[in-house]
Image (cartoon, rainbow, N blue to C red; front, top):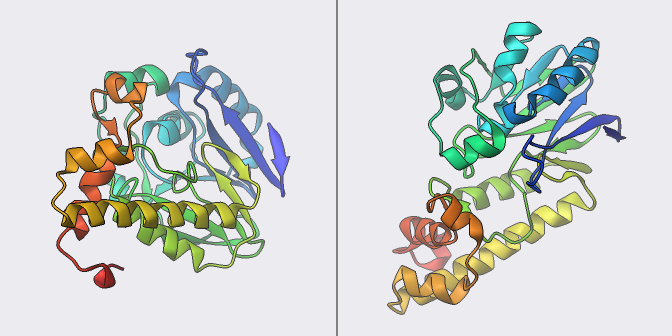
Length: 272
């Protein structure tokens, strides 16, 4: 655990130690942001038990298993309320349906009772705003500590260059969410898979710029008559192992499809 700008940042590594993937949970002012993955439950149970006095409530950035994997345990053993965007309440109450490769890495998220997160809420001493930022997930939110300008961006950032997305994700929606967040006043950015970001605003802008460029390239070739597969091969020649491992759930072709699906018939000036 490290402390950055008054925030406890806990890096969680799945029990499958060969993986280079990790996820962060954050504790600030009595608020736990995300819960981590069930595959790291041994370490997380110990942390939550020893840190119980520091946690009054839990807010999830979204319902994916690497963020909500320990929520059921917290509800049962710590009796803390767990909040999520209203779009995620029903998802949390049901058994999730996701691939075996994700279960192997992150573990199985058990169903739990979540409460709808209001757009404004309070921790012990601070007021917060929850900004609905769909694209990666329909229930995704970014959390803004208005007093100190701390922004917890969940999976909105991940990397400055987008090379792969999941089948259900939407690049246009991610771009709208980035623009929404960049209108806010914030200083420090915390990413759920990178921890505190140095020059976080600049990195969010860099990601948006890269997506704007990608969209321009995709739509230009689409309007020249290129099929999606040819556009994909031109822009994304590298074949990442996760494409095969995930059975195609993760793939760069989904970037191309999501852009064409929403903007393929619109003149560039009409895109928002």
